[in-house]
Length: 389
Length: 84
Image (cartoon, rainbow over all chains, first blue to last red; front, side):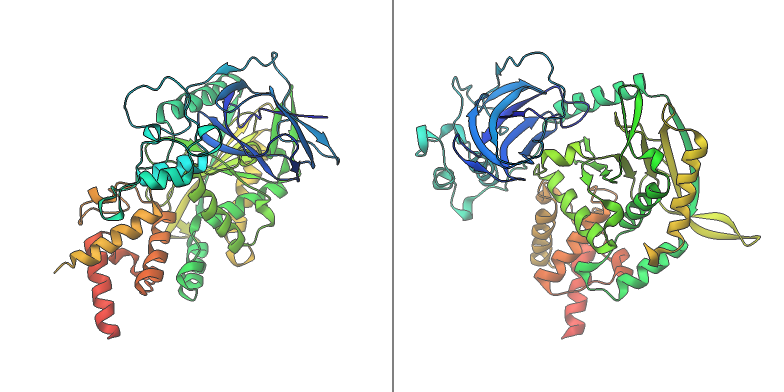
């Protein structure tokens, strides 16, 4: 029997609320199936299992909260492997507490005494249609509100209001970031390095490449920075992994946590898995997909757990450089500022070149500046031959 | 001259790209990147949306000419005229 536990979706997470079970006792489960949806301070995430089996027992019902590591369900294994969350050391015995009623963010209205029975799909539809689900009579199992109930209550298209935004609670998100960043600065002795990188070759190559591509297959500078960082980490693996129990634990796989800012405040860094092995087109597709899902709250829990390093790019209009705060227990964060035309010396002469300030914040317990410097130099070298990325 | 119907369609495309934005509140003359917080990925998705829904492929070199909804509508109006 395997314990399916509340996963830790980041250093900042202490507990989560089960908002949906997608499987019921007796259901067969295939590796990679999403079995539950868990709501955290950073929004709702789909939780998969990495094992085949049969769901035997659900221990934490929908609407209830449980600490990280608490057993949510038991799965009878029919294969080898580890369920998501199994690596989390079990903390204090689970003591599920009653959670606030709903997963969706309702508009301010009359307080409801009892929990709303509504599936996330129906809740999502309600948000899209601007329907206050709490006023509805459910026709689903045990009076649960279904998509049909929601759609039946929606205003006719001509009178439909602008769809409200699906999102997250900015103040809860702020708390989550505060906890992780405070822990980082408390525990991790950061060192900081920076290197201006001449992006002329990369940007010229990309412009030429984009000119002959149709709109849908164009690349962004971000994808070159992502791929160069991932390949550089292959050369300098000391910065890819985690600090756990007083020692570095390096990772073979390079899963880049890509920092994505959310409108309305807040930040996430979900994983682009095996970023070093993706072609630029694959990396571009992965990046677009990830950004879209991050901003519409449709990420998977494993994407929050997997990153072995973080890369943050401020985009073309931001500040010149960023000295990042490491996301614990990772070992490093790579940062890129905006590319700006700047004075540079090229072959002994002054020239105006598009420079990007690449930075590295490293955990000094795990590596030294010499190692970090090699990573930045490797990124620089890789960006001088963009066609090889 | 500004084509309000075309701007309406552009608003809808922008809303598909960034559903969490209140696109109705974006002034025609607001700079999408600097004032509204549209990033390079959103902007590329906006250009893709224009290509799919309005059949106008905007080259990367012309991104500087479509920084606001009004400018974008003018640009599209002109390319449609040129295309016949």
